[in-house]
Structures are given as C-alpha cells and as structure tokens.
Image (cartoon, rainbow, N blue to C red; front, side, top):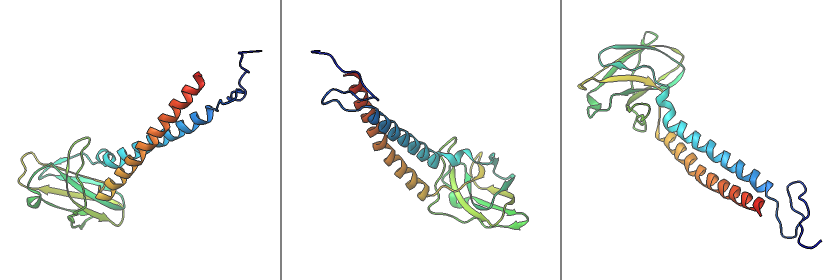
Length: 181
C-alpha cells in the first residue's frame, strides 16, 4: 500500500529514518530526577541545619538541651557585637570552652542566626549553657555546625543539578516531539 505506515513495535517505528523515543524519555526522566535530587541535597546542606536547632532562649537565661556526640554550634541573634557576647556552660557537669570558628557560617532559615562559636562533645550528654551580651532582646540556640565546606558542597550539588535538569528536559522534549511525528 502506498502512503500507509506500518504499526510500531516495542515503541519503535518500522519506517526508515524513525528513531526510538522511549529510550530518550527514560534517559531524560533519569537525568531530570538526578537533577532534582541534587537540588534537594544542595538545599538541605544550606538550609537543613536551621531546622535542627534547639528552641531559642533569651540572653541571660540557661538553656538545658541534650546533645549527641560530635560537633555543635552556638548561634545568636544577628548583631554587631560578636566579640562582646560570652557563652558559658557545662556538659554533664564539666565546663566546656566555646571555640570561635572562622569557617562557621550563620543560618538563614527558618530564622536568621549569627554563628557565635562551636564545641565538641566526646559523648552524648546534657548541655547547660547561657549567653549574654549587649544585644537588645538577644537570644541564642544550639544546633549543628555549618561551615564553608557545607556551602561549597551545596554549591557543587547545585551547579551539577542545573545541567542534569536541562539535559533531562531537552531529552524529554525531543522524545515527546518524536512520538507526535
């Protein structure tokens, strides 16, 4: 017969010059999914720590919180008096020193916090800490450490996500156009 097409078999056309589109769609979906996962990972690295903070306490009051083994950070209300704020306390009755970290970053979500310093806990235990300084309505909290390394990792994940998403969407568009022809 002249002018008729043969039916497609297994997602491919029997016409000369026709190319399979199902494979492109699968690759496009896979790349897009990897891009979304990379973007979510980057967002978690940048914003996740802010959602893992202890409930904030006003300057001058004592916060009591359980901490796990590892590094932890103290965050304070954003201010210009970093060197005038002091934080003291104990971990399971043993006094600890807050170390200033030049690579530690402040938090942006769900609320903005400035990094004050960090400490390491050799074992899990109960932390009793108090911060004070010349900051009106100042508050402090304890949470995970966010460093420049975290931000570089987030940037790398975000940068790798963009070409994955773009490539996946292009392949999906090509596959869609081929199925219409």
